Image (cartoon, rainbow, N blue to C red; front, side, top):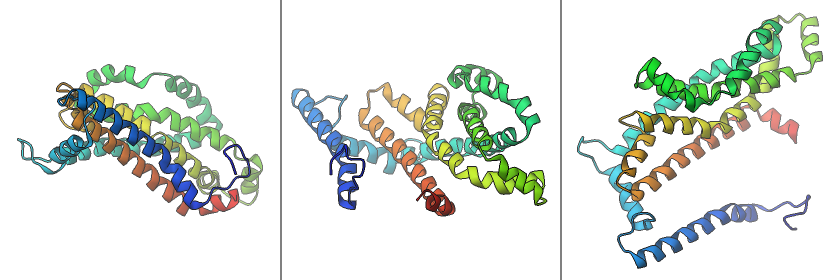
Length: 271
């Protein structure tokens, strides 16, 4: 028993209770602040009540705007496409990191460049991307990709380098080709951890998405937040922020579920 007991094993009910505890505290604190501010000023826009936020969410999700569109779903689809396309490019980051970790010539060619490129602030490249690619989708997708590509590459590289050399030599001794060792021995071992790294970079990808949409876009979750900011429409901004966070949480949970199901052997080995 106790928070400082190394051998403590909370039961399912206790785990759920503790997991919900901070959410409930945050909710209670928000309600208290909102009610206090609205008693002093019923027209307060900075901390809207839950009733106002529900109305705001309903208006963007289930009521058509002047363009005969449901804004929330149009914005969600636009942002989802940008992040989805950028995520596909991370396949190349994984493959590059794998090759750098296993093949010395790839390491010599790419390592120093990737180490330097990883330290370049991606947001500082945003003006350059807009000049080079224009204000369309390409520059937004490029920013998201550039923001996480070096990190995924270097993480894959380090994991590939940590594979025991005995495994590689044994594979060569048994007649495996260099490609078979890379793709059938090393990649399956490091892929669960690489996917975990990608999962942990969802927040960074969303950050770059919002930054790109805020600067230049006419649709998207980030665009909508900065658009309604001009009118202090917190009853829309807060639901949008919660919606973005919920989508990121669900994507994270989905990928965690996939890793646990697809790579169950890793979980068993860890146990």
